[in-house]
Image 1 (spheres, rainbow, N blue to C red):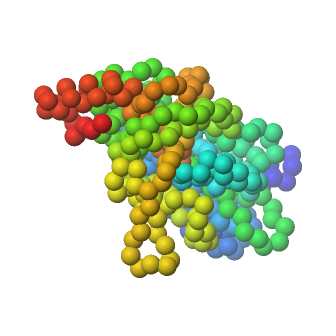
Image 2 (image 1 turned 180 degrees about the horizontal axis):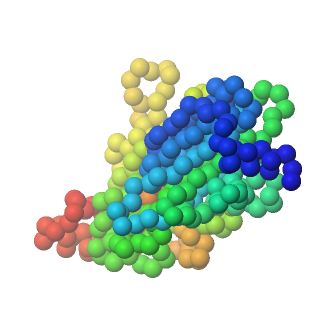
Image 3 (image 1 turned 90 degrees about the vertical axis):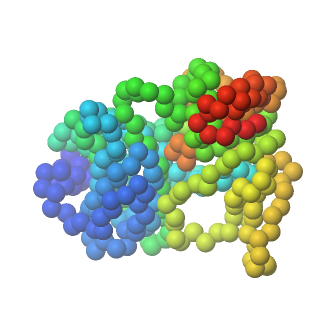
Length: 335
């Protein structure tokens, strides 16, 4: 048994390691520099269905305890995490050439699932598995991860960042965040329109298999942006980049994004010639770019847009006119 195994056995058996600052929220951001011990363990309680963790200068370990809100009669759930090894592009962008050129960095930690009297490896930077997505199940309604910082050579900036998502094992009702490959029904399309993070008309102009995300990445060229909600991310206070290569946006009108500038106290708006987004579909769906215009509805999952429904625009127009005429829609439908 190696030194690391001995250390974690002691942690599990005694729970006597020094505890750092505790978290109790959806997202957690913290620094290993606040710990006075290389073997300190910081407990973090994550009580939402999804969120993110950003651990700057990782040192010692985190113990993440997942307590997502579930129906009273549901006990077990599934947790998926996506480690971030390169900066995510923004939701909407206009320059395709620079979208995925960021150099992949080494994730500075190892992740273990807490089992019965032992820790089960879930992710390691050198495990030769290119997948960023890793999933596990709760046991008797409990799920916990240990995130162990890798040894550092000198004090230089390192950040261990990942997203998480916790969902019930059994879906009793339609859940837009975990929709399968089948076409949406009219009721599901209506619900998706009212609740999605991105709603836009557009053309699918490219498709790429992403083995690291176990998905097909579709490139959508927007023809009319109807709605896009701003992402809620755990902020890395050390990141002072201004994102000059991308639009940091707030939606004002169709295909209009707002870009702040340091040269003016007012707000400047600039229309992009070709606004794009990456939409992800499970690889088992065998999705591909197709001809014609679609109404695309997507939700954020683990930091990326995940496709919910995408009817052809002519089919959506018919549904909008019918629902708006009889007044039965859950929200004001548009096309």
